[in-house]
Length: 463
Image (cartoon, rainbow, N blue to C red):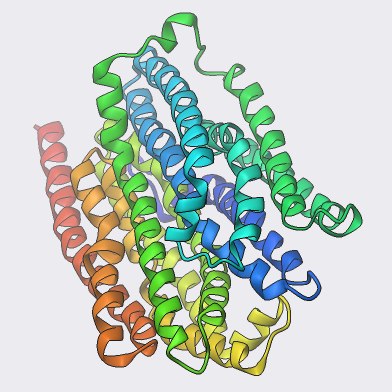
């Protein structure tokens, strides 16, 4: 740090690495919970294509659980960081306590509602009579573990906000490693098939939850008390306001996935590929893309405590430099993903099992066209989380919805009317470009405002 209180570039990099690398690894391992399941399910003899499609249609329901975990966890964590930046630890404790109660409420509601309405929901999501049994087997066990998923994901945000990013990483990595170890045992050794894949995932989440719960009551800088869990309208409103961006982004992904599944099934049936090949391929490619995005999201979440704390402390130059560094890092990673998607699509899809030549042909085209503008896909999540971190939640929500709802959703409905199933593929890069342009416009304005605020603060200090 320099004498005037600004971070040097090296200092920002060190802090970002200390927070973002563990959080990125945690995000990556979270994705691996489901990716590893698909890799093993893709090797179930005889009916692997139907099994893969069944898991694919479960994704929107899983995403809804994650959305509500993000609503509370990623809503409370920035508030928590801002209050600690203001040295208001008492308010920070109340925010954490209210979040814990909200985690419990949402877990119970989602579990009950999901189990009651799972069959009609799965049919709405694109399951056929053939793939429905596989989907039901998987989602039933997953829903029974909702409370562990909710707390495991949600509490990790607060562990990271305390600066214990390595602990947050360990909670996820240990759970994921256990999931990977149990998958072949349950799926093949005990011949549990789909149920075994789901059970391995949930056991991993239970272990992550137990570790997170232990650290929640052993924070070094704050202490939870009974009064911390007293819910107030003001706290709930603020948590929802800050978490709306992350939650709506996940819900938007769910809505798009529902429309995408049905569009692929409908127009796929009219093509040489049939209805199930596009669904199976799109589900796998979505998971592969989530692996790439886990790095970007990890960076955007890793920078949140830095941005929130320094914005609350009115260190605006640190905020600006931190955002630019996070964006640059995300762009480099996006470039690597772009190269892999364009050059090695068949090799990537082969990891998830074998299939017909039509299966691989569709996968290669989907990868190369739909993911063509992966290079700029880091702009939207980093920018959305930035606005959320500085308290401008309405802009954060808007940024989170640009790609999924504002652009991609109408495009995957309109384009196939004229282009058939190819229309779905071309909708992806056009939505990516439009979202990047919109986010870039608002971010340029915000960076100028931050520079002006920093100059004003220095002038007042000099005077």
